[in-house]
Image (cartoon, rainbow over all chains, first blue to last red; front, side):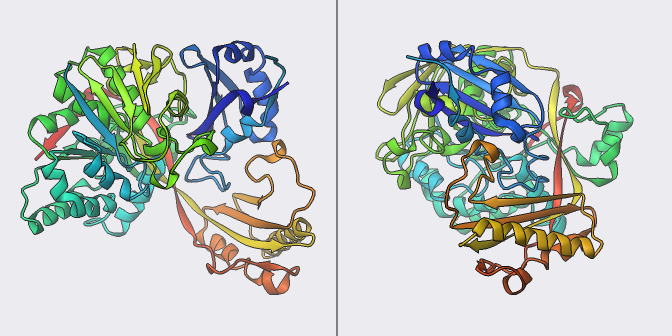
Length: 104
Length: 448
């Protein structure tokens, strides 16, 4: 098992009522190994109640990166939501606490 | 090969006020871009303009910035492109003219018009332009009588035209954020509308630097490795005539530029990476390469772009009721139980008063408010901040909510404090409605 924070970088932000989380792996090797482990299904399950809608994954092999769209995750858009993290700024840090089943 | 140095000194309205000054003085730059407009910012400016239609509705920080740096801007021959005009570029220009007169310096200030379609909206709708919400697919009819503003993200060629007319400062309202960087490239390198790869490359450069220090070490996962964060360098894109570019920052500044600080920012607010749509070009974010070519220099090559769509994105804001959020600090022992009890008391009192809100929220800051079940609960919670919020179309009941927090200090559990700020403010909600419009009906104009 590897904690994502040991093998990747992450950043998140809002797109309307949705959040995107970009994950950049420290090497091509980890990126390739993560492809079958860090999927839209595992990410949706990990975020639990934080994500009400679908999760879609996009691949950016040129950056060893994956981009996740987390739909309906802010209880409304930036100016109408009541939650503290109104723009999804902290979802990237949450992502990095995830553990995935890969080895060196 | 000809190249230009384009910096970003402001990632949003409220960003570091020293950053643009440092870039003007020490950045050795040709162009300074300033991005004041987030989606939420437009709604803030709209509220300000509603209170004072003549004088408000633009980024006032920008005027102060020009006032204190006007000599260096002229001496260093720096052109400025800013979306500081917000929803009232005319008021902004008027203030800048006063500054230019005060310093006895002839500043050529151009306004790029045509993004503001608020007054044409009804006619456009009559002419069968639908303005469907592109996120939810809803019809605009549901918000028709509540619209505050409608602005088109206009293309970069309109902004480049202002530069070709000799503007020292180009004031825009809504243009695409990366467009602030694409425009000077079009002007300097003579790029045409079908130079898709070059336009795409400058768009990626613009995307990387548009959020200021977020590509130079700000908001970076490995924050512990960074030096001199108090003096973080804001970004500079050195862009060559063929579109390839370097991302860097001024010498003797803190922060870091490497493959990862840049990659994190490339992914920021990204959707489908193969279809990054700007008004100028569709960019393929999976097409290019990053290379660390020197200390604090990342070189980007190989960006591919395709023909743009035949629509512009439109940002519409509308009135969507009222909201308020307030908080109390609750200390231990049993901090969490006391916070839960406090919330229960407040909601019960409001319920007994017969108030029904459209939406409420109860959060315990300091305890998984951001990460819910993902974060582990600590064994000892020595204090917690209770944050409550409500939303309603009825201003009066939101106002009533704001009066129910302070009484908890004397009438609730012990150890409650943190109410120094007084009652929370009732805020009008200006919500965001993204839509599309046929490019053919939008006409832009430069006023010098």
